[in-house]
Length: 396
Image (cartoon, rainbow, N blue to C red; front, side, top):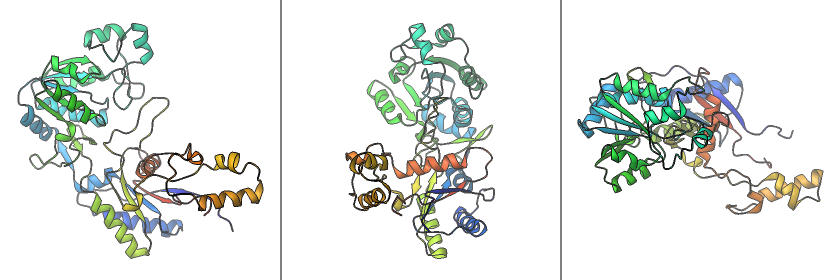
């Protein structure tokens, strides 16, 4: 019988992961158990994805605000510290900010506006137009911002992040001044010592600061890039990708993930004889059209993946073929013509008309987004995702 189903995505339940657990054995056992209980076969080119959270938990990759504070103080001493471009998040940045505050004496907090890097808004952009404020050139004090826009609550969290972040800093007896600017150079009028907290634009920001007189310039990936007093750490990403564990500790992005995905692939091959692709995923890369939030607060969608997930899709658009190349055909003749076209398509369709409208994104970003949407961020309890038929096309 002809297949009538393409890609199938399953969220797999597993045990609660704790420090020291063997994450590779748990993933493999969960896949095999799900296959047995649910009655699906394991095939070549299936994909297992594992959320970064349970990998980091198994690694025990955590840090306290005291350990963050010690690293901050080792880099900046007692100098006034500019903390610029943080995202507005209780989960992602609030605990980190507490650690930063505990490690210094005075902070000038510079927030981007109308929104942070991932789309959390301090104010609606239309209000900037109404007030005649240019976010690309105007630097605002806290008073000027309040005079223009008043007190704004985040639509999803109900938090006034200006007041919230300032209170977190002042909780430690640290003086805090808040300004608003989208130009990294603005902070240099207040201090030459800067911790830039942006994620995807951090390299450019640091380059600008250093080229314009910045002295001690670091970004979040430079904090906890090595262990401090026995803390967890991440050599490549530091505090980037961390999120709240307790009120005074964070879980870091997992480290050294490549051996994990390779071992899971090898173990599944040994137990099933099938070549299954494996990746670790964090935030997906997509934008909420209502809240305008771009989901990707992690430094990358996938910190590690097996070789078969390298690259981008190489696909043609079926509707383009049906409306153009084979517009004169119908029924079985049309199906046969499209099937032959797909079977004979080139290995590189960049620029080809029949590929226009296909998604020119990396496979890991697409699959990671699919996985993140499937597992969710709440209580579904499915931190592993099993994907079948992803690499199939109309001819299979």
